Image (spheres, rainbow, N blue to C red):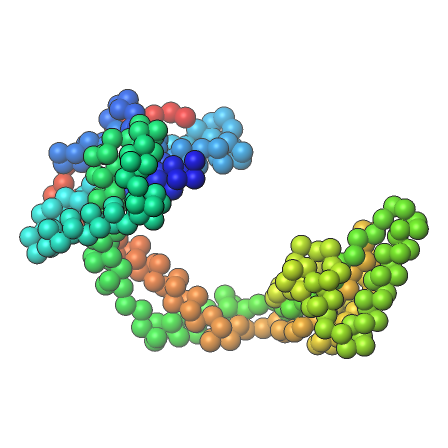
Length: 326
C-alpha cells in the first residue's frame, strides 16, 4: 500500500492530483489540440473534498467545490500551455530532456521498488494505470517544473534594498508581543487523595532539585508527563498572551533561568523554567529579513507567472466547458 501511495504521488501535475485511471466522462476544456477531461480535474480536487465537507454543507459546499474545480482546471490549462511552449522552443535540447526524464523514471523505480520493474508494473496495474499514461504524466510534470524554473523562478531577483524598504515602510507590521521561552515539567494529579499526595510530593521534590541546581531539562525528561518531555520540556518561544492565565501570572514574576513554585492547574502540578524573555516591540530586521525575502519572492513568482501565462494564452485556443455541480 505504501508503494502504491508513493507511486501515485509521483504523478502529481498540480497540487493534490491523484493518479488513478482518468474517467473520461466529459470534456472540461480544450487547449489547442489537447483535451482536459472532467475526470482529470476531479482527480486534482478529490483529496480536498473530504476536508471541505467537514466545514461546509449545502449551497456553500457546492460553491467551494466549484471554486477549487476552477483553480484545478486553471492549473491543468497552464500545464498544457507550458507543454506547448516547450515543444515549440527550438533552443531546448529535447533529446537531453527526454534522457533526463528516463533517468528520473529509473530513479523512481529504484528508490521505491528496489529496481524491481515487475513490482512497479504490478503497482500500475493495481491502480489501473497504463504505463504510457504514467510515463506521459511523469514527463509532463518534470517538463512543466523545468519550464517554470527557467521562465519564472530563475528570473526572480530580490534586491537587499527592496527588503530594507519593505521593513522600514511597514513598522506596524513587524511588531511582536512579549515572548517567553519556557521549559515545563508536568506531573498529573489524581482523584485518589493518597495518590494525589504522592504526586504532589514528587512535584515538590523536583522543584527542590531544580532550585538546588539540577538540570531542569534532565528532570523534565525523567519525570514530566507532558508531551514535550522527551525534549526536556522545551515549549520553545511563545507569546505571553497565549499562555493560560495561571501560567502567565507565574511567568510574569520570574527572572530568566529561574524556576517557578508549583503551579496547580486543572488538578495537575506544573513547574516552569523561564529560559528567556523578549520584550514587546519591533522585530529586529535581521530576525525578519529572510521572511520578508521569501514573501517578496512569492509575490514576484506569482506576478511573473501571471505575465507568462497571459503571453502563452494570446496565441492559444482555449475553450472551457462549464464546471459541473457538486
